[in-house]
Image (cartoon, rainbow over the protein chains, first blue to last red):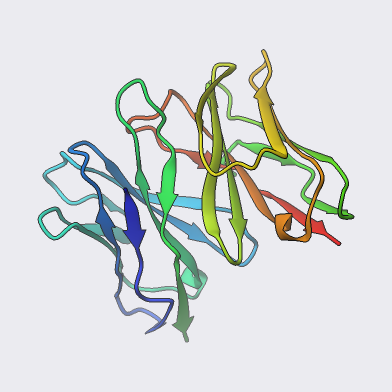
Length: 117
Length: 114
């Protein structure tokens, strides 16, 4: 069964430094997608970045990049130049499903990031 | 703002009661997904509708039901509520049935069962 593992329940980073949030996944599907979402204390889920299993290049979106290592089944999120507003819960998720099927997301347990001034 | 709206934002009710959560997807999105976020279970997929039809079911209790209407808005009905149903309920929408489609999440409805 598909599974997402986030082993870091909480992390600290100094403002302006880079931080890596770990995510490993388990799937037997050849086609899958990996997502990262941010959940601030206000509760909403904010999409950050997406990586498809067939994408050869690592995805990047502004200060966010995804370090995709397919053989190791890892999809770590790298946040560069951390800002105080980056303090939030971060969830890694995998899209499960195939063509003509459902594409529900399976979420990891999350990592709470605190950015120190 | 994701463009997905959910009402109400907060809901407080008693055990045994029934509530309805409402979701309006982004304009043009045909898929609606419901997720439950609780302290002990984390974020879990409940159910998906695509263009009015049920597409997939996750860990949705029999006491819960959902539907998607012709105007594509969706409702999640929770009945015979228990204390453990207290959670944040998210609705998400995507353009198609999935694939590489990003799922846009609404702000959530926080349900408290007393």
